[in-house]
Length: 138
Image (tube, rainbow, N blue to C red):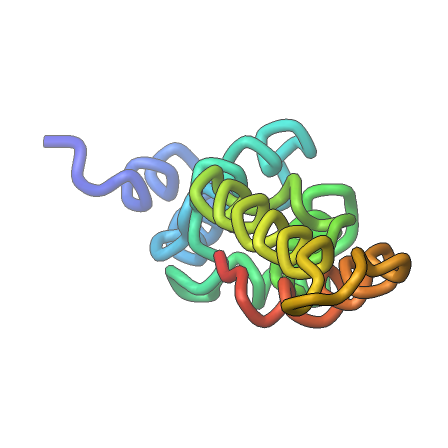
């Protein structure tokens, strides 16, 4: 008896609401940048919300968007880094820690018969900056 939400909005004289309902029909929760707080965006990103689902995708909307939520989405789309670690889902964060531990083990393990390496810090820095971004994905 009421029709679609768009019809109900139009019947009540809310053409702008009806247009928004049509435009946002394929959006995921992460794509609602105008109403998304930074805390909610962070929660969605950390729980594994896709940056590439829906039409337009959250990443497409954030590309030209303003505000903290859009900035978080853009940062989350970049390769893993220590600065973006908190924006990744739990499984990816755990994996990053595991891969970093492997890097530390390699850095601290001298070759057979050699002394412990004094340059372990440099190797672990290279591991963190160049290996992890390729190893860790959302």
